[in-house]
Image (cartoon, rainbow, N blue to C red):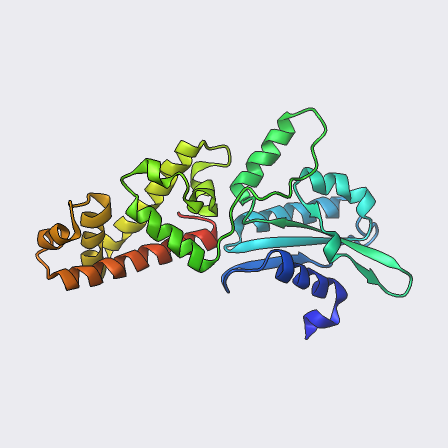
Length: 269
């Protein structure tokens, strides 16, 4: 009800719904609805600099931050600065306030497309480049997968864990967790290595829990150091084949869930 009463909040939420939907309750969006100094409003000032610094701190420390919006009253003045820090103007989220025809512009950044680490790399590169900054790119550097699509890609990547060449078309190579691990400038081979490392790390974490150790063993003998057949893997574990298959399915589900958590939270550490 509060969101619907405020036109700026309502427009930002509708932009999310149509252009950048949140994929989970653990993903969150941030709207800087009101930001100003008492004497200078949104003009350049010490208070404005403090606000921007605090905003950047929030970007870098908020788990699950998916999207952020900045509402500005003077877009012509702020557009070059916001473009430099990779906040794109979002015409679809602009609204008119009051009866005077004043348009409120909104700028935004999708942190799943350009995660904080990639964003810092971008700013560092622009600081070192004396040429004028190019307009912020709208084409996604990261593939935003739904949970079912992510799970299917993760299961396929597990099956190909020891065959790097088979990973080359896997969508997870453009996932947030891989780009954050490998770096935004990583080569395809480096991203493949990062994906394999993440899957092995997720698998190995099962060893820390006594009840999941049997799941780890099923994964280890099937994908990490695979036996020639699943029947042989069951023999190595001294288990009936049906029991081995249950352990394997539960292990795969646990690894997929952990990787999805890393994808949403933006960190594997």
